Length: 132
Image 1 (spheres, helix red, strand yellow):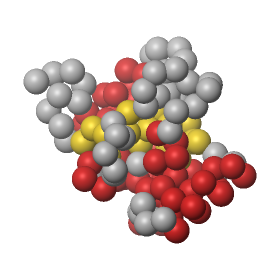
Image 2 (tube, rainbow, N blue to C red):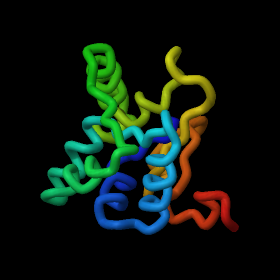
Image 3 (cartoon, rainbow, N blue to C red):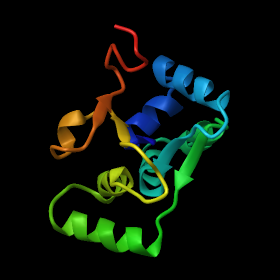
Image 4 (tube, rainbow, N blue to C red):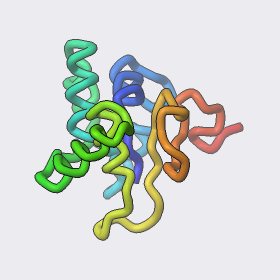
Protein backbone atom coordinates (compact mmCIF):
# COMPACT_ATOMS: atom_id res chain seq x y z
CA UNK A 1 0.00 0.00 0.00
CA UNK A 2 1.35 3.43 -0.93
CA UNK A 3 0.36 6.29 1.37
CA UNK A 4 0.90 9.99 0.78
CA UNK A 5 1.30 12.21 3.82
CA UNK A 6 0.51 15.93 3.80
CA UNK A 7 3.82 16.93 2.21
CA UNK A 8 3.50 14.34 -0.53
CA UNK A 9 -0.13 15.31 -1.09
CA UNK A 10 0.87 18.96 -1.47
CA UNK A 11 3.66 17.94 -3.86
CA UNK A 12 1.22 15.95 -6.01
CA UNK A 13 -1.22 18.88 -6.00
CA UNK A 14 1.61 21.20 -7.06
CA UNK A 15 2.50 19.01 -10.06
CA UNK A 16 5.51 17.10 -8.71
CA UNK A 17 6.81 15.33 -11.81
CA UNK A 18 7.65 11.95 -10.27
CA UNK A 19 4.44 11.77 -8.23
CA UNK A 20 2.40 12.65 -11.32
CA UNK A 21 4.10 9.82 -13.24
CA UNK A 22 3.40 7.45 -10.34
CA UNK A 23 -0.28 8.48 -10.18
CA UNK A 24 -0.62 8.05 -13.94
CA UNK A 25 1.03 4.63 -13.92
CA UNK A 26 -1.18 3.45 -11.08
CA UNK A 27 -4.30 4.63 -12.90
CA UNK A 28 -3.46 2.19 -15.70
CA UNK A 29 -3.13 -0.76 -13.32
CA UNK A 30 -6.46 -2.04 -11.96
CA UNK A 31 -6.49 -2.20 -8.18
CA UNK A 32 -3.44 0.01 -7.67
CA UNK A 33 -4.19 3.17 -5.71
CA UNK A 34 -2.46 5.95 -3.83
CA UNK A 35 -4.00 6.37 -0.38
CA UNK A 36 -4.25 9.78 1.23
CA UNK A 37 -5.26 9.81 4.90
CA UNK A 38 -8.30 12.08 5.34
CA UNK A 39 -6.49 14.31 7.84
CA UNK A 40 -3.54 14.73 5.44
CA UNK A 41 -5.96 15.78 2.70
CA UNK A 42 -7.63 18.19 5.13
CA UNK A 43 -4.28 19.71 6.13
CA UNK A 44 -3.12 20.04 2.52
CA UNK A 45 -6.35 21.83 1.61
CA UNK A 46 -6.06 24.14 4.63
CA UNK A 47 -2.56 25.14 3.47
CA UNK A 48 -3.38 25.45 -0.24
CA UNK A 49 -6.86 26.20 -1.51
CA UNK A 50 -7.79 23.74 -4.24
CA UNK A 51 -5.11 21.16 -3.37
CA UNK A 52 -7.74 18.55 -2.49
CA UNK A 53 -9.52 18.96 -5.79
CA UNK A 54 -6.28 18.68 -7.76
CA UNK A 55 -5.22 15.42 -6.12
CA UNK A 56 -8.71 13.91 -6.16
CA UNK A 57 -8.80 14.49 -9.92
CA UNK A 58 -6.41 11.54 -10.25
CA UNK A 59 -8.41 8.33 -10.66
CA UNK A 60 -5.71 6.42 -8.78
CA UNK A 61 -6.14 8.50 -5.58
CA UNK A 62 -8.41 7.32 -2.78
CA UNK A 63 -8.99 8.82 0.66
CA UNK A 64 -8.46 6.67 3.73
CA UNK A 65 -11.37 7.63 5.99
CA UNK A 66 -11.03 8.55 9.63
CA UNK A 67 -13.07 5.76 11.17
CA UNK A 68 -13.98 5.56 14.83
CA UNK A 69 -11.07 3.22 15.60
CA UNK A 70 -8.71 5.40 13.58
CA UNK A 71 -9.87 8.55 15.41
CA UNK A 72 -9.16 7.01 18.81
CA UNK A 73 -5.77 5.65 17.72
CA UNK A 74 -4.73 8.89 16.02
CA UNK A 75 -5.78 10.86 19.11
CA UNK A 76 -3.65 8.58 21.28
CA UNK A 77 -0.66 9.00 18.95
CA UNK A 78 -1.02 12.80 19.05
CA UNK A 79 -1.25 12.75 22.85
CA UNK A 80 1.83 10.49 23.01
CA UNK A 81 3.87 12.98 21.00
CA UNK A 82 4.13 11.39 17.56
CA UNK A 83 3.19 14.64 15.82
CA UNK A 84 0.13 16.47 14.61
CA UNK A 85 -3.14 14.85 13.68
CA UNK A 86 -2.27 14.61 9.98
CA UNK A 87 1.11 12.95 10.60
CA UNK A 88 -0.46 10.55 13.10
CA UNK A 89 -3.21 9.62 10.63
CA UNK A 90 -0.50 8.83 8.07
CA UNK A 91 1.25 6.68 10.69
CA UNK A 92 -2.02 4.93 11.49
CA UNK A 93 -2.58 4.17 7.80
CA UNK A 94 0.92 2.69 7.57
CA UNK A 95 0.21 0.18 10.35
CA UNK A 96 -0.35 -3.44 9.26
CA UNK A 97 -3.96 -4.20 8.33
CA UNK A 98 -5.79 -7.45 7.70
CA UNK A 99 -7.14 -6.26 4.34
CA UNK A 100 -3.70 -5.39 2.92
CA UNK A 101 -0.79 -7.75 2.43
CA UNK A 102 2.78 -6.64 2.32
CA UNK A 103 4.43 -3.61 3.77
CA UNK A 104 3.10 -0.07 3.47
CA UNK A 105 5.25 2.64 1.96
CA UNK A 106 4.76 6.18 3.20
CA UNK A 107 5.70 8.87 0.67
CA UNK A 108 6.74 12.10 2.36
CA UNK A 109 8.86 15.19 2.08
CA UNK A 110 10.07 14.70 5.69
CA UNK A 111 11.39 11.18 6.26
CA UNK A 112 12.94 12.23 9.58
CA UNK A 113 9.48 13.10 10.98
CA UNK A 114 8.52 9.44 11.33
CA UNK A 115 9.70 6.92 13.92
CA UNK A 116 12.04 4.02 13.10
CA UNK A 117 10.29 1.00 11.62
CA UNK A 118 8.03 3.00 9.30
CA UNK A 119 9.04 2.57 5.66
CA UNK A 120 9.28 6.09 4.29
CA UNK A 121 10.44 7.30 0.89
CA UNK A 122 11.25 10.91 0.20
CA UNK A 123 9.29 12.23 -2.78
CA UNK A 124 12.52 13.71 -4.12
CA UNK A 125 14.51 10.48 -3.75
CA UNK A 126 16.28 9.69 -7.03
CA UNK A 127 15.24 6.04 -6.82
CA UNK A 128 11.56 6.62 -6.02
CA UNK A 129 10.34 5.06 -9.26
CA UNK A 130 13.11 2.52 -9.47
CA UNK A 131 15.50 4.73 -11.46
CA UNK A 132 18.92 5.60 -10.04
